[in-house]
Amino acid sequence: KTIIGRTWEDFTQFISDLSDAIIKAQMYFKLQETPLLIVWVHNLSFEFQWLSALYNFGNEDVSMKLMVVGGGGREHAISWALAKSDKVEQVICIPGNGGTAQEAKCTNINPSDCEYAEGLTGIDAMVQVCAYEKVDFVVVGPEDPLAMGISEQLWNCGIPVVGPKAKGAQLEASKDVAKTFMQKYGVACAESKTFTDANLAHEYVSQKGAPIVIKADGLAAGKGVVIGHKLFSCHCTCF
Image 1 (cartoon, rainbow, N blue to C red):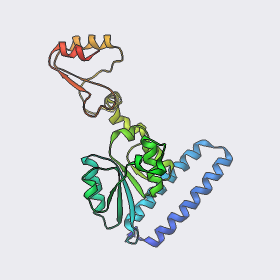
Image 2 (cartoon, rainbow, N blue to C red):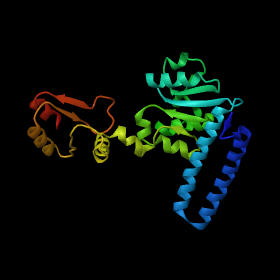
Image 3 (cartoon, helix red, strand yellow):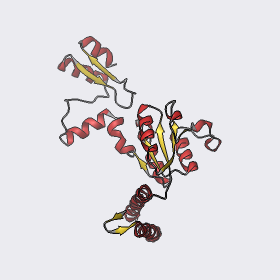
């Protein structure tokens, strides 16, 4: 129960001092109108939030409330694994599924059923539930809420989150962004080209021939891919 020779009591004091320093620095830089430094201190506050979450995991006296966003088998597995920890009192699943409903410590919540989230939809409603339930941190499973910016909203509410911000989530949400990234940094991948003009796409397909894989950019729930074994089917896809 030590961190580099320090006790958890020392760590607690360090977190408290760091919190005070961040607040004072934010106030100072705002008064001095230095936006670059404000951003740096703002990012440091995110690190502080994670330090607090990590401290809670190491503190035997802390009982944590966590939240998992999603309702698939992946989120069921994540919720089950988190609930196994002695330091976790409750795992709230948004919206969860029949499996998570049967897991010990897991509670399914549908934001549409919550009075305190009335009038809110999508990630706004999810974030409202997180804030109302006062969770210690959130794990986001599905790509859609990540691509829509749920991580930014949670961080802005002071809630640590496991999941990339919207820009990082584009690696999963956009085939074009992912391919451009891989080509730029030398990550092995198949040759590809992106089109917004159907006529140019038809020309490329005719030039390359079949078989060829055609993908829709953006999230398509695993349904946005066509493997064209004949040129006719490939051209029918490029409408």
